[in-house]
Image 1 (cartoon, helix red, strand yellow):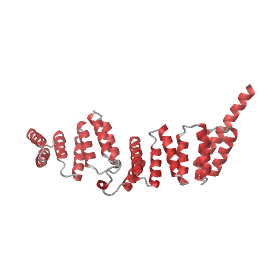
Image 2 (cartoon, helix red, strand yellow):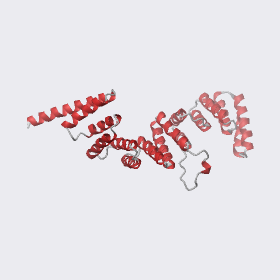
Image 3 (cartoon, one colour):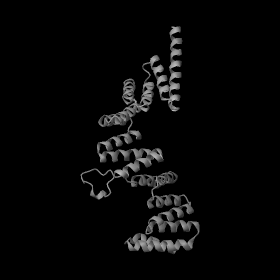
Image 4 (cartoon, helix red, strand yellow):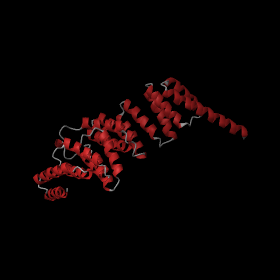
Length: 302
């Protein structure tokens, strides 16, 4: 019993050592060396699922696509819930032009983990190759939403760029029977704004900061972030945000009104009055009598 236990411990130590060497060599770009080390692992333990997966990655990089698929198959036989193996096999199948099988693997991994953004991204690419543009946009959109939550700027922006490339130039001409999969930043803006409404002003500002990293020149982002800054008493930051909103949309009455509020808080009454007058005029022009009166009341109070 003792000899078996000791021998097992030695085998475990050796397979882990070979496995770690394989990982290191793969990271260093020594693909053949990595495959050699994973081969050594699997001779000791043919049930080491991660070694099959890692060898599959190395084979894929060495252009042995079919060999990679066979390794992913073995990894999935050992662990049917290995989403990375499904992803790798999906990518390999896509490389071989077996697009429907690639989509099937993406479907399987997303059933296991519905929040795995790379899975949606890959499925979008496969749908795009099939010419199913609506499905591609929907999957890129879902990936973008998850990357947004993860605050992964580069990958989220890449998904949005793909969506813009696929969207028709005139959305109004789309088939009305199609589901509207147009990417709309409004979903994210509203989600951030709702955090502010619930009193999570700092969290809302963080979300607006993040959205602005995606290069959205959207007056709503600056305007609503300005509201959050005002709630926290950051009057100068609020004024700056309202300035930016107005540089994009010069007739945004609400921005003049709230800039007036922020300027009042900062003690700049002269410019606050000017803002309330501008806001009142714009509200009046669009027939908004309630906000017209509010702007006049603020002007009088100031």
